[in-house]
Length: 176
Image 1 (cartoon, rainbow, N blue to C red):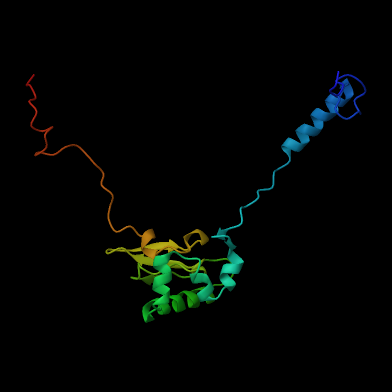
Image 2 (spheres, rainbow, N blue to C red):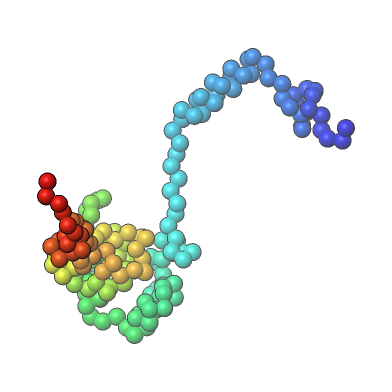
């Protein structure tokens, strides 16, 4: 035989351990205790294109823009206008005025084309959809998207029964 031995004392490497009654019951109790212990939940650390959130918040705008898609890079390159800057200032102010662990006050805006940047995380924005302001809480996963993506402008169609002019209505229905 060329392989390791399967019989023999339980302490040799490569051999099969021999269990006695005592070791089986002890192992079973330990396994039960380990199974009953609450498992600590590990949360996946958020990264945006390989950069974690703390680094994103500390980044200068020029460096941050390089992580965005081409359309957003072009927009930032052409310069931020007055309205988007005013929205960011209002969001900063609303965050500053909060106390403890509560959410900041909602800041309403019509700027559906505003790009979500790391500075906006944790803010609450009311995005206008043409009729009402939809409340959107900005989360890290939203970085690099537009505010308008979170306020749908139409009501999705609920298809019901076919109406008068449909092909189904033209079918012959016999009288009973």
